[in-house]
Length: 260
Image (cartoon, rainbow, N blue to C red; front, top):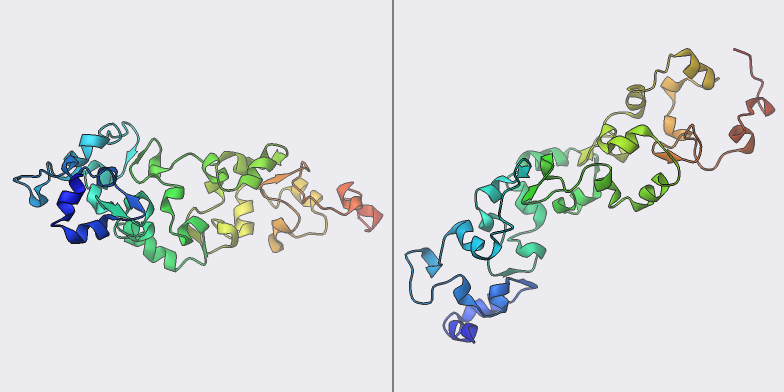
């Protein structure tokens, strides 16, 4: 086999290239897929430089997404900025851990993350590609899908509930109306304190709102104490477990309620 011939001189290469994820030409002992065995005008006697070499096998994949988003290293043909051409112990034959590679360019995100009190789990685990394509995508931000479908690929329990229950309109429309995708200073990655957030849509001073919240100052409580912000079997999005009189809207069973 060709690799035995090559490894007879390149003794360190056999150990170096034997990784968890090995590039197919290496695994198939086809060193000459990328290297000219006799000579070349190029360093490392490769047959072509940069992405031109990769295109010999990956030409279909390397076409840009017309009208979509294309990652600058991808369009610039900088395959080796992220990938090891022979093999790697990291999935995708990456040179380094995923977040380390991403933060080498997206330093502002890394700096901002350090100040975030709450971080999205794919961010803390360094899995940027849970949400973003590293090469190209039809959507802005190199997102793999729009929201909510993208979010529901992980939040499967919520997806199941959304198919059976009443769905809060922001949850049905765009998760980013209420949540930050990377980090937040607020619990549950919400974009602002809960009362300000709910107040963007719900007018707390509206007479009908005041009437339905007898004895409660909505500006001094947390809406989530009573309501589920995503889905509910109840049309007013009350939580699943309710005191029977409350579920029946019979407040006067227990309370002295003044007519308003």
